[in-house]
Length: 304
Image (cartoon, rainbow, N blue to C red; front, side, top):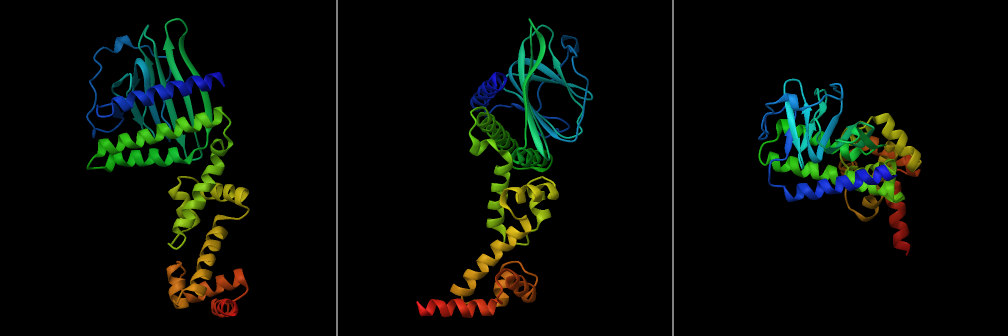
């Protein structure tokens, strides 16, 4: 836990720093020439290679908390200084390069479809290169935000740089809150799986009347449909499809009793293919057809 606290303190220091530098150029995006890029590295001899060059199928953010170092790519070295962020999209080759005999510390945030990790790395003149505080978490928010950042870098237009900065700040704040929740054992925020289910539940409640499906929800949250459905059922006791149906039927009940719409209109508004499929689903859940339910409940209300 001491290592985790160390990472948390470094992350807080970084966030405070970029808030002071918000209007300056502190973002570099590999494989993109869309934002103003930093100065080129002329002297490669000042760097020391300690890690092999790698690429992977997920997004990464590298934050320079203090000091200076480089990130080696296919054909150049990105100069990292205090307060700078480098966004590394999937499959971009890169490697962390310490400067000889110079202290620095960096935070790496890696995100893939079913999880993420956070760790501190750096160099001190006494102990050499180090890594610390690695801990994996499954936080779909990071993946969603980083994929949006990746899209914005390649397709965004007006206020592109400003929007990318706002996305990075959101990611850093999410990571900071997650780390503190884990460290201080705040169970409400410390369980990312339950948080994901809560967000899916909220999404369904807000969109059940649209043409919503399990695959569509999984795509929205950047996670596999089978994993998401199994996770949702383990927490809620029912599948996403069943929960979606429940939301539609509850809304239909209100409309039938308190509204004046035709049954065909209610079916259409709730996203059913036609009235027949709506009536079939409604009777399966309630034991009554929509017409029978409306007649029975209105009669009950009139008797009150």
